[in-house]
Image (cartoon, rainbow, N blue to C red; front, side, top):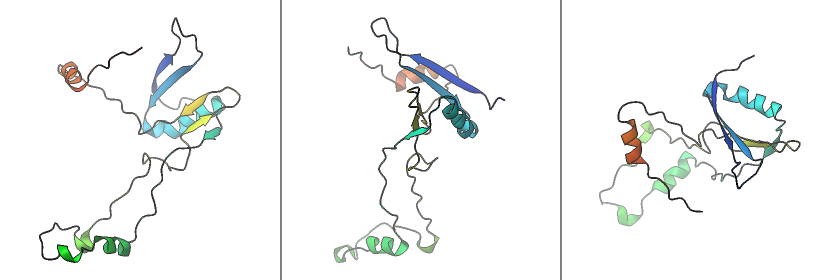
Length: 152
């Protein structure tokens, strides 16, 4: 059963001077298919052991009373012009996004197979892929990007 269309790039590390068996398969798919295809790939490649995520988690969110106590101004600021910090009761709380915003930051984003040595990494929100179409697309790229110097 087909889950959906994907595009991919196969990257082999093999060069004339380097005979490594290391390869990469990069898969792009519609976000709606992500979870189903990820589960199928993990099952097919026997990647069941999660690799522990290495992210920093922020401290606990402040309550409204703690936020108000932090926004109180010292005595030397009273009487001087200052910008309004919020809209009072109409203020909307700021939403804090931890990690990439699409998964729990405590959940793994990479899995490894002890039997095959295959590693699956979910790079959601870590990579962007843009498609530029039109007569000015090449000039936009040449203005926006600078070729890196090759160092050996």
